[in-house]
Image (cartoon, rainbow, N blue to C red; front, top):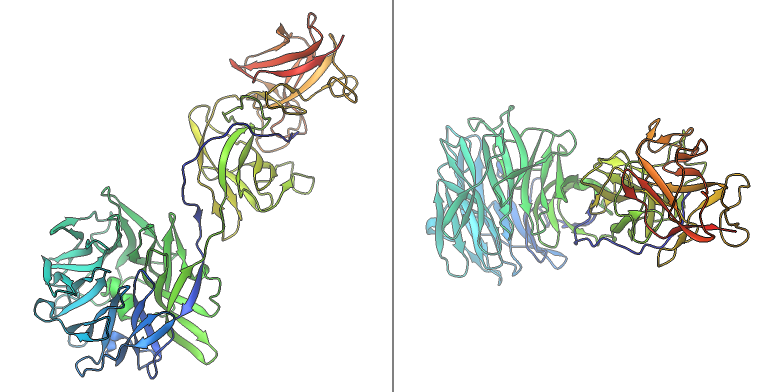
Length: 636
């Protein structure tokens, strides 16, 4: 029996982000004339994108083809015209909101194990700067809106394939040309809005790589994820939370078949979070993090190679990598989150801004064949997710019953709890079990879904599962339950007890003076003051219904219809109008109501001495009393 009611008490919740999968629209950044295959490398807070396009389809920067750098801004891709003879393979890597672009002309020779680098900066007015001095050989890798540039000296050795062997971490200010060596033997990869730099120290001939943050002239060593031996930080947000990778790689080789890598987040409390991989992939690397804590990168079927986090910049997507976003505690394959991505395979994500925009490189199956292009993803505004505003006993007593108990029927109140109104019926009670999914809505606690009676946008009636008798349990509502786009409400920690006795009522009133749902055992007529109800009389055998009365013998199979009678195991007492009811009478019964789930009933004889009128009915189970003011109407 489920009775409609008004909820008069509520629990106030703090604001929290809904744990739901984001969705994105994709924009193809296009290509440049004569340079058809493009890679996107950098993203600004306003959505400016930079990268480069290659003249030879299928070639990558490790093969040193001719390239042209581009700037994508306000919906159009523009050739940066880096046409100096020395810049035959320009590789833009970073851009800010002013349209300043930084990068380097890079020539990496795998055959001769050599690297040559020439840094460049394209000013807002389009003029080209070629920084010299300490910037010689530095690859700029990050640029903020203050014009601060973080980069690393790129070189490689015959005995070590680590690209940052014996390098320096450099901080450069575009407006003044001031250069600061953050750390000799270190590398810098990312920068936040205040100038904190993410990077690594590189020692022992490139074999010892440890994650670092550089701030206010000091370096801070971050935690390396166990059991990995090496790690580096690729990006840092304004809260000082960094993203990167933990890995094991033998830099004596360009490819180490035993290599391992997992994307990580370095938390401000010194801990490190393993982000995992997409599906059954072998490795993952994080390339960017924003102020919301969203992380992007790529997951791969293969082990990492010697380029580590530079793979999305130097190498082409091949179909073995998947761009990912890590949001609200879960890693998502970005290919599954597109609303308009037909024909796209997103191989790399290289950066994310604070608006949630993501830039990367993928393969698009065009009518003329597969093409490699950069992409810009823009998050869609999320539909409001479910939010719980209150949890209470189902009957609507005043005061409301705050505790849950095992096999206790309770109500959830809130917003956006279901997309449709639905209740139980013969078609959704299967094998005598309550449904755990009604109209795409579920209720769960610690990963266990509970039985449902009724769902609507603002109200759910559910049955608590087997829960502890003390403390609290988390309760969440899941919409789109069972689909790829599940949305989970913030959990509410609800107090629990061994019992939470409450009667059900025919109607509910604001002051809590409510008629108990009861009927005359002999006549089957509902008990009440006026027709079609009839008042009870002394000596009548009455059946009253309630919820949350506790354990029984035999024990309830929670979530299924009770096959027969099952008596309460806890000590009970009952009074009507202050007069004790004889609970030892052979006609007395208190336990499960056969044929129902979570519903209890009590069969009792109205005792002598009860006066006519509305008389309070109070059940006490193991010392816990049902709410006051519930009444049975007694006639003369």
